[in-house]
Length: 284
Image (tube, rainbow, N blue to C red; front, side):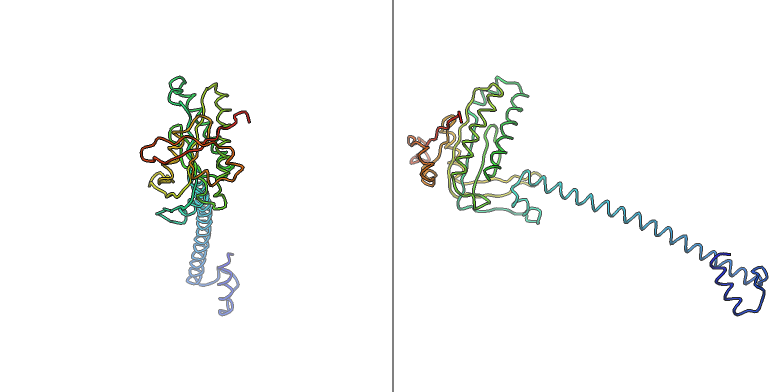
């Protein structure tokens, strides 16, 4: 006899002097016991189904939590690939307007000489493959010297140092970086049988840095320092690092001796701009 029947029968036997046989109980009592047994079985069945449903929901919630954490990690990694780490953290913390005035930074532009002419002589796949190899190499070098890549503009590569980590505000590491870019570029060009040179321009000073864009984030910098650095690259020579007098004066003596004073640059809006050139030894 099932549990409900046994419990009820025990109560009935205690209070009613009658046979121990269930079948000898009055019909109404038998019906009552059977109804109770059915109700009990239904309750147990509902409980079992509820426990099963709860188990399924718990498993689904755990799976969804794991998926959310995985997606969150992917988003963090994606942001780190396109933004500086401290800027990524500010975005993830909900900061929507990011704009900073940087009192001292060093801006560098590196441009491939005569690349437009080269593209006319190379196939599309070769052009893209070469640029990808060069800029991937530049990314590795920038990371090695704690500099922040800002962007590429066609065949031009832009880097800023001293923008986030104030321990690396010295200009000398950026000179070492620039030299490594030139030497690395020439090796890549040799691999592709390309005759070309790399021009580098640098200027130091205050800049504005900020995050722009809604669907596509772009961390960029602005100011006269950026414009002057770009001009130094334009007015430089192949396989040289061209810096302003202001930047030159910030170098230690062991680096200053690498540079030679250039002529006064003929720039209308910057008539007093003087440059210093460092011809990189491409054999090193």
